Length: 267
Image: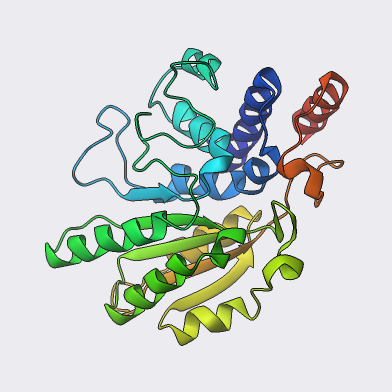
């Protein structure tokens, strides 16, 4: 499956889950869909028949509130069947409204923002000590960079030259209560990472070739961890959701759902 088709499926499945259960966070699920599609189509080493394969790349999905996009991509890649997504947000289900490590293919339960990067640094550091071949990826939301724990981890990774670590920031510019620059301005974000000893690249987070080229660039001889600042659009793919703060939490009603389905099917 091409990454373009996979991204389309991720958005549609996320929309279905959120609408069916009156859940939220559809805006962030849409903004990260293209990143996940390229990762699972062309970048990550994984085996859906053996989710704990020792040589797999580790992906820690820190923005656990946008869980539907991760659940969707794992299903499309064969970690489980589509029927289990019908249990999303149901009592007793592992498919909770924040990412749950009991779901096959999920490395870490997330949603309490600011934790996954520290865990990712530990995994990367251990892998480097053991001379393991796997690579560790961490997807962060932009708003969670307000958390001080992330900056301690960023400092740690630069100091220990964790060149087996890649961070992807889903930089959609909107967090729960307002725009990022109003709540806690992050700029100049690239310069901050660079000053902490990171190799940094800014890209269009919806342009699949740019995502692929940034992640596939040979950095084996580099002594730095890598961060990709992916400039994205909250609610990407549905015009009335794009760049709208309300769609951080809002659930689409029947009319909005039908219109969103129509737009996603036309892309």
